[in-house]
Image (spheres, rainbow, N blue to C red):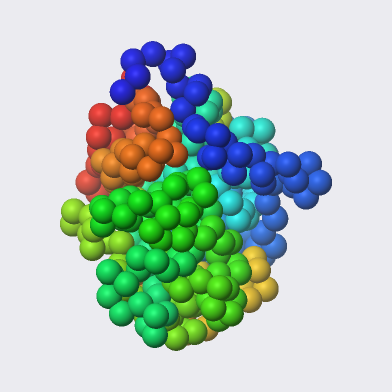
Amino acid sequence: MPANTSARSGFLRRGIAAVAALPLLTLAACGYGSESDDNPSAQKVAAGAEKIDGLDSVKIGYFGNLTHGTALVGVNKGYFQKALGATKAQYQIFNAGPSEIEALNSGSIDIGWIGPSPAINGYTKSAGKNLRIIGGSASGGVKLVVNPEKIKSLKDVKGKKIATPQLGNTQDVAFLNWIAEQGWKVDAESGKGDVSVVRTDNKVTPDAYKSGSIDGAWVPEPTASKLVAEGAKVLLDEADLWPDKKFVITNIIVSQKFLKEHPKAVEAVLKASVEVNKYINANPDAAKAAANAQLKTDSGKALPAEVLDPAWKSIQFTNDPLASTLNTEAQHAVKAGLLEDPLLDGIYDLAPLNTVLKAAGESTVDDAGLGAK
């Protein structure tokens, strides 16, 4: 790995940098993300509550994905607002990691739920100065689903058109690594080779499948289960490729400035997150319903049971950021030629989370040697 911080600024190759820049071109016109029209009952401030760190609000970002279930349930059930007292919890919903990172950099959000690849990219592009990963949220929930009439075995994937959500995103990197492990060749940036990797927004992937323009997809939930509802079959669960079947799919990030200036607010959000994960794991059906209700509030449409049930079941909600798997995912991106060897030292600051976990009587978590000094 590079040994100096000056090497950090040039990590991303042109393909990733170009893709990361695309959503940013429209940010001035449309904003970083849509604001959540939250359940009013979940936003009530308890009588006598006080502001935390003197803040009027804490701005929290997340995706409208089930892999961000901790955020969805926390918003719907009012956990974050309760933890923040009289400081208002404000929410923005994102569709792409680069736009959430840009929102964090600009101060439009303070804390966010996000996938590992955008966190790595954001950290390396800023020379390690913009964010910290402060907690885990979810593992799993990613599958290779295919048209069973065209693909009957893993070997049959060769020569087929398989969708991933975005060049260089977490699932794209995982699929490129899996392709390489089969001994097949694909140009990472163009997606051309022994397999055609078709970068397709998750929103349109089901329609692309129905039209026959793709033969399958390596995608997160609930997109994978949406495809299954259209007749696709699960060919591979990515969890089966990882030790203990665990790998990071969603982390919690914070801007370093906000972490330094408002540690009590950060700790409050983490306390709420830990409580939400405890609730989810103790009450999976009620939590699933709460997540779906928040999806309906945010997007106007809930997921049908045939999509929701299998999708929710495949995701594990955890406080552990699974730091060693983040480092492995970064090396997969290096191997694919999408990332130069990154210096990830300092990307984690798990001290606030471990303080919360100790107070709750739960096991602390490890940063795999990548913690802030």
